[in-house]
Each structure stands twice: as structure tokens, then as C-alpha cells.
Length: 125
Image (cartoon, rainbow, N blue to C red; front, side, top):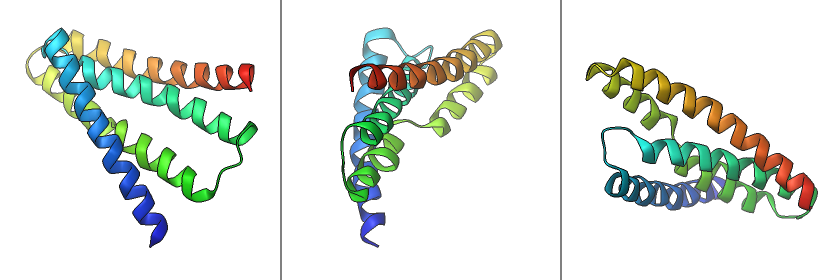
């Protein structure tokens, strides 16, 4: 039960960070395209790669800290459920090209960002 509470606490923090990021992106760039969710998914994937590699190579932390940060905070921060909804909204608005571009940018960008995070952690640790 304690581990579940750590994941939930981290998830709440991550969800709050996601909300702030998506809101700021909407204000700065408009809401016609889901820039905020794209940024969250790519940045979260980068952070996950960096965190996982850093914890594996350099920092000896407890399983509790790992649970709080990886599935908790970063799991709450990144969200492919919001991504899926954004794709559906774009598609149903008749913006199929934007929807497909968003899928490609989100998936490729997130995977690339994770590998960059792994590379960066391996380079500096």
C-alpha cells in the first residue's frame, strides 16, 4: 500500500506539472494544435530516459524514490490518453493532416527524446 501511495503522490505532482505546461503552451501558442501535450510527451520521454539511466548508472536510490519519480511523477506528467483525445479532436474537426502530423511528431519525437536522454546520461555519468 505504501508503494501505491508513493506512485499516487508522484502522479499528482506530475499531473499538476502537465496541467501547468499545457495551459502555458495554450496561452503562448494557441489551442488550434495540441502543442502542450506534444511538449509534455516529448519532454517526459526525455526525462524518463535521463532518469532511468542516471539511476541505473550513477545514483543509488531506494525503490521508493524510483516509484515516486518514474511511474509516479513522470507517469502523471506524460499522458498518451490526452494525446489520443487530441488526435481524435483534430480528426473530427476535419484536420486529418494535422492529426497525422501530430501522431508522427509525438511518437517519433518522444522515442528520439528518450534515446537522447539515455545518451546524455551515459555521456555525463
